[in-house]
Length: 314
Image (cartoon, rainbow, N blue to C red; front, top):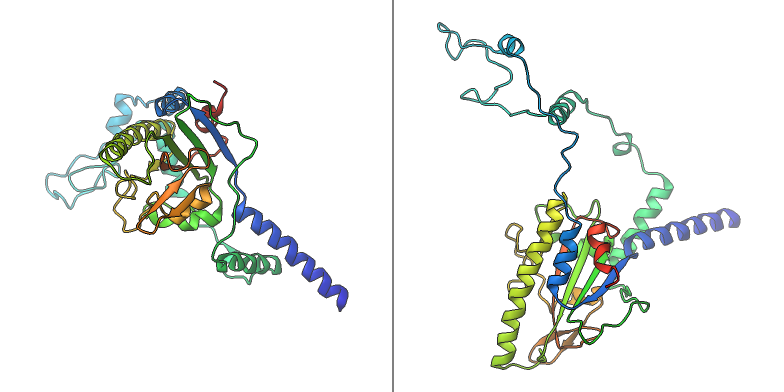
């Protein structure tokens, strides 16, 4: 019995370690650049529109088109036979102009439903252990995840922008999913990009100069983030960024959930949140409170050229 209990315990520990790695493990790409425009140029250099080399238009001959056409019956009118290619009212139907799209439609129509035995059969012991490990991690108030990489180079005097990309682990996805109600970010790749702009003024103070610089940084961040998101979208990936002014996704649908720059979740992205009593301020690990910080989300993986190209040597 002791040996059996030991085997069960070892299996649970192994499963717990695997689940912990899956939930917490994170890869990152970090680089420093003179300004945000440099990051936009590098990102757009690797963006490309969808490859259409395998798409061929169909040019049906006149005889085939005539044989498939079902003309309205003069006597029966709307009760007569309909052309199956135009099932909607007003003889409207989808425009299938490529073999690729046509094959996809046919597959979706003819593909039968597949029975999933896992949905009705009881879970295996290993699956139960995995669920227990995940519930245990979910019950923790906070897990200290070190997102800082001590091997990265320090910025030079001319560097005014930091680009830091994280592969988002499951633990953080659960905290960000409410920001994007129209997407399931729990599945597939998800990369979080933080963009830090070095400021002249200390953001812990308030003055007309600080307010003016914040407005300038906001305009620079939004304009640059729009172009970076467009570069991702041109390559077939989803991308959106958080508007620092409202704390909500800039391009997504309305949501009541926010992510302001002083949100505690930024701690798990490598920043510090300082409580000054009257207010809070975010602190960059290198530039401190002389920084303006925003973040961007994309479905591109951390090893995608759109992400890794930013980190190439200057």
